[in-house]
Image 1 (cartoon, rainbow, N blue to C red):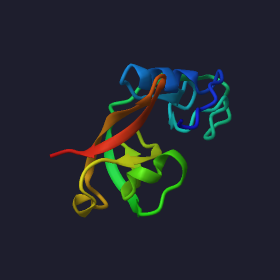
Image 2 (image 1 turned 30 degrees about the horizontal axis):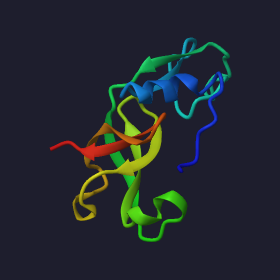
Image 3 (image 1 turned 45 degrees about the vertical axis):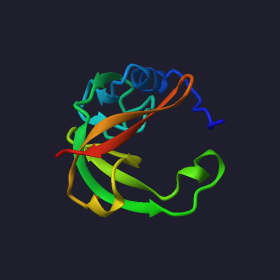
Image 4 (image 1 turned 90 degrees about the vertical axis):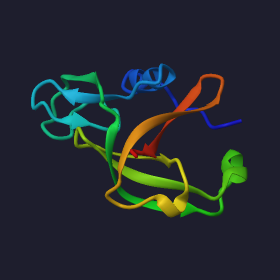
Length: 130
């Protein structure tokens, strides 16, 4: 059994979007900057007027690591790649990067993919744009 995210009023649209295979992130209605991770106050201007927008789901790999030893429900999947991805909207996300670890490179273009883990849990992942 995979650990479950806690859905609250700030994060529910993000998780619900993943179930539909859509990537939704927040955008401040006042300063117009994008926000990730979900929160109730804009970290740029401290406005409480934030809303969700559908992200393009594309970006570049900022950094990555290969996980050789994993624990819990991910133990059987090692080795796998986890990376920091700078979305085109300007926010940075951490997610699994699909594909051969020998082919992953910093600066590589990626697009969002979705990993269905079990009933009711889908996570964002990224795959290389070929």
